[in-house]
Image (cartoon, rainbow, N blue to C red; front, side, top):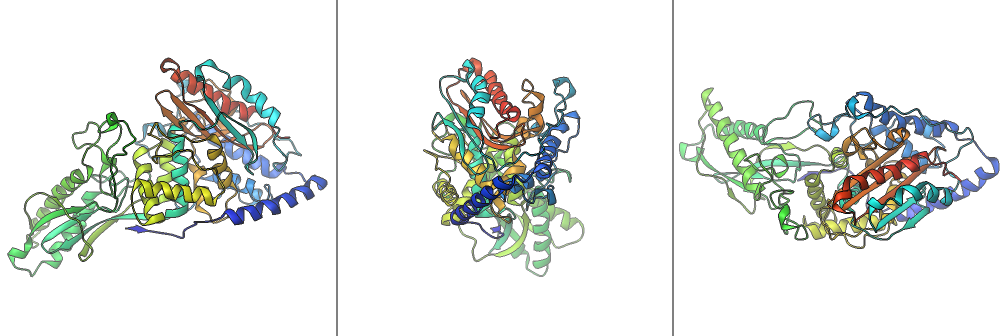
Length: 538
């Protein structure tokens, strides 16, 4: 079961009121022409700081970026200079060194450390974005033939006012994860963790899945981030409790079986809109109980029955733990048979438990490395929070609820949480609206946790080895979520332009020829870099 912090389920009314107040302040500032040099310089330096990690630092600064971005929307940078280095609940600046996409780019890649862009002394972020300048900046990169015949784009300021919108809905690929992440932060809560427990039901030890997406099959290194709970530790704690509680029991009561309960989630585990070829190769069935994100126990591909595999690993670990207890002179507790499914454990007594990393850290990781499995599990938790049901349909209903509360345009069609479905159709205005709403969120709103997870161009996460052909300044000025399927490439995030004006953008191309996929990805990188180099402040 999840351990939760406060929920944020509404906010459209507050956001409208804040916009009206901000408009009044904007008029007053236009008359007085107050400088915003300090705030803009702070934002520029923080964004550039994320780019210098290409010189070899393996521990990028990711969490501090959220603070200037959210301050940008709160009263037009009035207070950004006081708290440029804020952090998010449940977020961390550490990386998982085991993720290949999280390793700093090698020197041989040729990426150069950018020089911080000059910020005009009188630059202000509450001036309107020059739509013509945005169009000029993107005209060349988005006209590339390699992008194919259908390119959708939206660019806006941090108020969500569009400077450019064209192309309509397209296949979004993994940029879809932004919607699921925002919904998890809002409905489930950034500080919420998920418990994997064991209970004693009669003479059966039952392993109960709580929907921990990163539950591991064995203990992980202390420096792995986010930290993982594991079934070996759970087995050892369970064994210690059993030996203590059954010390005076007759031998017959000390002979136990193992069961497992994976019923927290409901409905199909494998999304019916995914190609059948994904099963076992690209993704496992989503389960409330799995180890190693549903990887096969054979070490190749993904399991088709991850709950049974998790129970098998746990049973072996529990046998070992009980045997170790017996060798120290403790009472002997025996396990017989193999693990079998159990449908209800409500009346059982808890033996032991382990906790997942908080949702804020899970979101940060899934956005950084585009983790499909974590995203699909969080979609089920969104369903539980929204409708009390851990199904795909309930999760998608939760996503729609959050977007509606933020006044963000709804997807034309969203059928999963991760973007693996080729039947998804989302307008880039949805992503732009969400990112603007995140910047405009209340001081304590966990929605701000989107920004630390956005990969930094040429530096972190799924953008580590990208932007090599883009202008060097983009490395410090662009953070974005990537999306890739066959014949589809997308990018959605935030760029700080040459005037120091933050822009939110979404770029989607979903009819890319097979031979042009890598070139199309580079073209979108150049488009995002063009926004970073643009003097787009009106």
